[in-house]
Image (tube, rainbow, N blue to C red):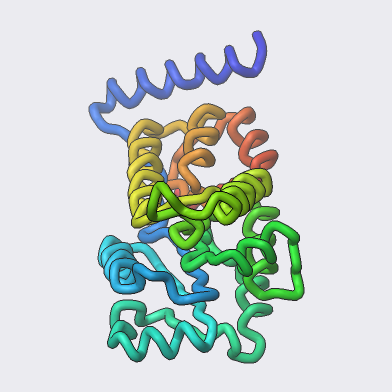
Length: 254
């Protein structure tokens, strides 16, 4: 009998015991909120809409930190939108900020908003003397998800200049090759909601046993740290897969 067959037997035994007891163990406790780092190297055209999306994400329980460059911070204040980004709105020029973010981890989801040609080029060329690039690269190397809002690189008219459109398309393809997903409009907020929903669905399906397949689903849903309730059984394959993927399992005592 191989490890997967043993895991199936364990699952059958656990299900039978829980059915006999007429109850089930609580599913792994998901974090109360997901961690999002929003990077604003330039003020996007849709700044008011972005502010509303940040406010909604925070109202849904997600932790959103917004790092802005000085000119963007002034634009936010001019538009009267600071309260939508607070708390968690910080100036990228603040001494030691980038180093602090790098040591604590940029977050489960990094969103680069207001991405123009210059910032996109710096990302594509991995110019890591730029704080924007350093944070995005750290997130990618740590297995996190990085999205780039490419509204500023998307033609708004069919007759847009051919060479300009070609270069914009090339930059978007280069971003994708690095593992940075181009998004438009409020797509980042939609993706955040879908990831949270997927993680909740995965948690509810676990019961009192964490299997290798459960670990895979949690990882794909964006989880990087999983708090397990008392008496949860973790199969050897699940433990091995979690270690390989970098999913931290926190097991509470009985």
